[in-house]
Amino acid sequence: MSHRAAFIDRDGVLNVEHGFVHRIEDFVLLPGALAALAALQAAGYRRVVVTNQSGIARGLYTEADFERLMSEVRGRLRAEGVSVDAVEYCPHLPDAPLEQYRRACACRKPEPGMLLKAIRTLDIDPASSFLVGDRISDVQAGRAAGVGRCFLVRTGYALSAEAILAADAVYDDLLGCVTDVLKGGPIRAE
Image (tube, rainbow, N blue to C red; front, top):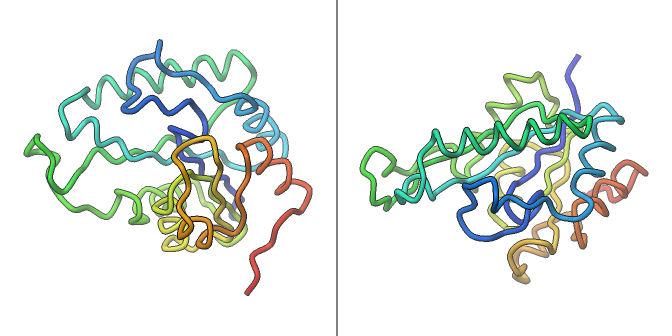
């Protein structure tokens, strides 16, 4: 039996967008993010963070730094009774300063690689799942992975008209989106 999932972008959706957040003191959960994760957990959704991390390719921090941060974040969430099922990240960048990360890959959003990996690993039914991001590349990745509904929130980057048109709906924040979805909210018009 496949599971439903919420694919959630990190910076600007779960936490305040500061640009290349990689230190725990800079990681600040957005208001309502913890409640949104708790509601998804209670409703039986897998919770998957999918995040481009080009700061690694730029040499601003290492993969070990990123993994240490996310381990600390996961620990803080567990202390609040909430967990995430997976954190998928892409450290690549086509024009990266660090050669080992310089490539066009299948995992960097708008490509669907991170989502497809989680779908396989966690036995997720993408059609009954949804994605929440703050950029059109999030929506594009969700569509390419067959995710049923793709939403944007206003807590991250300013949304372009193109991004708004690409999304199934736009919300003020993650909690508003999750609350609406769990009430049976917006279904994409075919």
